Image (cartoon, rainbow, N blue to C red; front, side, top):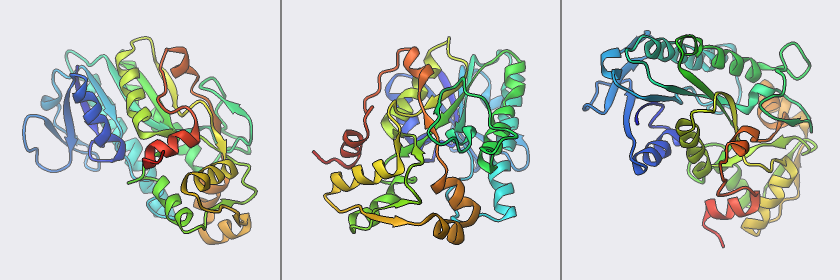
Length: 305
């Protein structure tokens, strides 16, 4: 397949390009700078500009571009607007461009996150679970994910198969959330947040990109797909597992009131809220996880036996 990829320079995008090319697919990267060659497509989501001629002939697209949720540890109104618009504007632009191509690509795989489910305690969540809109579980990130997914409507209306990949915490030692947990844990300062009972749904980077390739190549998969390992854990379990892998104590607690006081809404949604998410559609479609269990996954990510 000839696959257009946005966010190709990010953590997931970089690994995905390697994954796709190693399996014989051709990749066209969407870039904001002047293109360096035929393998790049110029676009500017802020200005609403995209080179549709350079997209002609693509068979599929993977849309991963968007402001990092954790780039700032305390949100203000301007940053929240930027988080939302960095997802909805780019998605609307790309979905509309793909819908206008002739021939149209067969599939658009568009990013989303398990934050779609809101803060759901220990409730087991699958792709069939209802939206938290208008309930106590609703929050900023749930609303962002709803609008993010809705922005693919032009592609779906044009008959393109649209898949929303709802990703959990991606385990990688170089970038993302996991390295922020590693440093204090290596110093023996690994700590649970609040009561530690909030669920953290996770996936290794290797399984993340393999799963994206799987949904690209599986025509029967459409709609939301949870990209999480089959065994989510609580915050306490994650901290203890990391302590065992690093041979460091993990007995500290950061009280919930301290998280709220220090980080505000971002702390509440990112550290104190949780989702117990299962990858039902991946499992039913025959996807095999390389790292289904947390502690062996951490050892693989950190190259520890």
